[in-house]
Image (cartoon, rainbow, N blue to C red; front, side):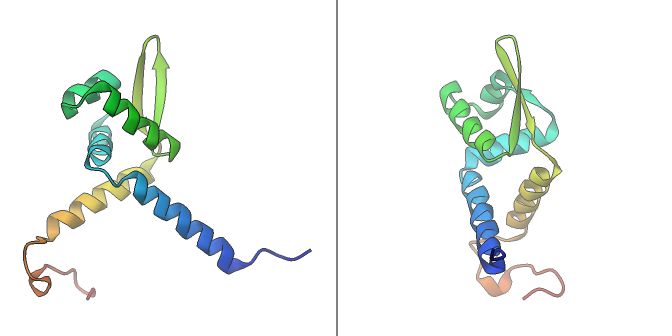
Length: 118
């Protein structure tokens, strides 16, 4: 029996990671995650906080659940959502911090760089 090809396993990890970024590729989904960074919220709370229609919020929550980014806990007719784990918080916090540091309207050579990065 042949051992698994390390390059293939690495490629599978890269593909899964790219899928994770696809799941975060809409502003509304990033907004949902950012709100859940503060505290768990019900669907109704998310609808109000995002000022978005309930079916749209539910559709985006489904995508986030499928990618293991959020968990839903049902209580009666209401579902409360929270982040799956701290990795999700880091991904979104870092993305928000990164985009806040870089003004894409400025030429690239005028962007702020952290010491040691190009």
